[in-house]
Length: 180
Length: 219
Image (cartoon, rainbow over all chains, first blue to last red; front, side, top):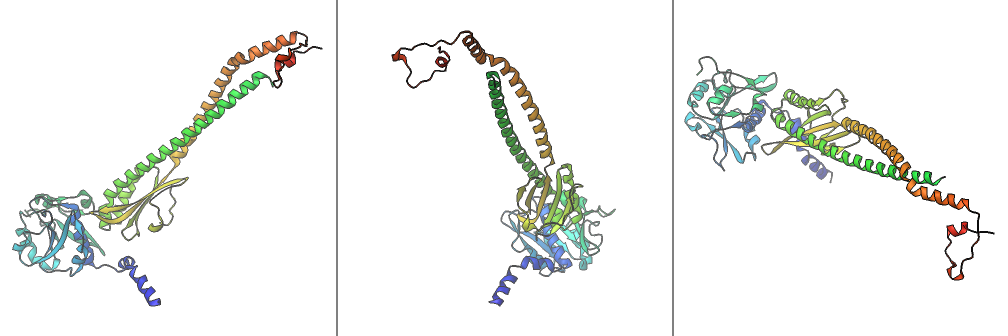
């Protein structure tokens, strides 16, 4: 009887437990990545068709593990479900609405930015100067806190509309001279 | 008490009670409308804040959230604006100079809307893309209502007194329509000695007592 009561007490406490576990850096970045989509409007050329999922693609090494899958599980945005895809070749990125590239893949950043030229996918990275080089959103660190920088010029070139509310929270970065 | 004074008294009491009743009714109705409008204003403010604070709440930026909450200072009667995250924990708060910095109450103890003698509160969930990401709590004082009631009471008292004065002056003049003939009659009755009259038997009022006949009697 006592065990049953303890089990029930534990079962109804998940939200409190979720709070007390300290999220890892990539748990936070996964949540941010999911939430970025809520504040970005995609142009018709890349917006998902009705009934299809919004694709969050991880190009190269995947630092999230299962974090991103857990964050988007069962969620939807504007009637679209969300799906993750791990991609090894740049040629497979065409159907992605969001493309993330990890810091470990510095060498692929230039390749990604080149192949994404003309695409309207939201480019998110965490390498240094990613936004200056033409990426749209770059994760940064402020002590132990995860922050982000946005390059509104690059986003405008890609036809993406980033909400002013998101811009207000970000550091604004402009193109590096000669980057385009 | 003379007839004039009785008539005046009746008129003044009737007018006074009627005016007081009408004033109280207007005051109650005015208060209801005021509270309804105030609740509506609070709802509109809440909607504006919710829209602007969603991003800060989503990305855990408490500093930006506080800046957004501080925008409610445009309404000087809002004394407290507090954000709770999706777990019900206090996330950011704005306090006006007039508010006491009490410890945030748990979200579960906050009513959706309430109005007491001194405050009006509103709690609303903040939703983004179909998901509840937090709760906004707003608290407003009712000093404007107190001021409105004070001014209403002053105005109503002035109107009441003025109306009673007008009623007094008018009825002092108009009561002569009633009391004048009575005085004349009484005066006339006083001029003649009392004479007894014998009423014919068939006219004798068995049950009715006539005040007039009773004064006309002679010995």
